[in-house]
Length: 111
Image (cartoon, rainbow, N blue to C red; front, side, top):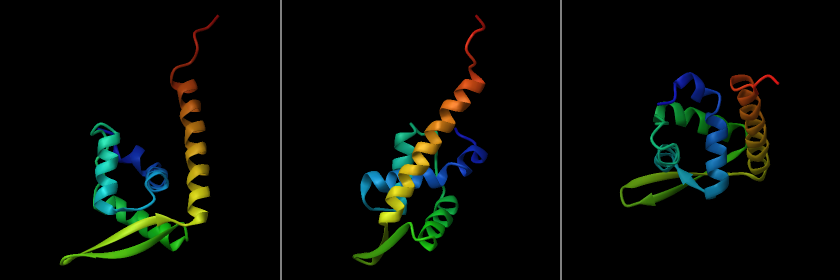
């Protein structure tokens, strides 16, 4: 299982990427998709997820839409146009970071 310390720095990127790919999701869906895509290695708690979603909304990258489903109210999250472009920037930046970390952790053999 991935440590919370590693997850903290990537949670925004993960959430934005999922929203970009799925147009709109509610919180439980996000947790399930992360767990599924990570092969069970990442299990998001609502205590970690919702502060990120609320911050993204306050920053103007995410909007919410309430939908009544019987007695339940689901809050769906989707990206604003700014959120779409920022999501791509964060994903690109993270991919560069992963490549750099590979260079550090698995250096090429000396020739």
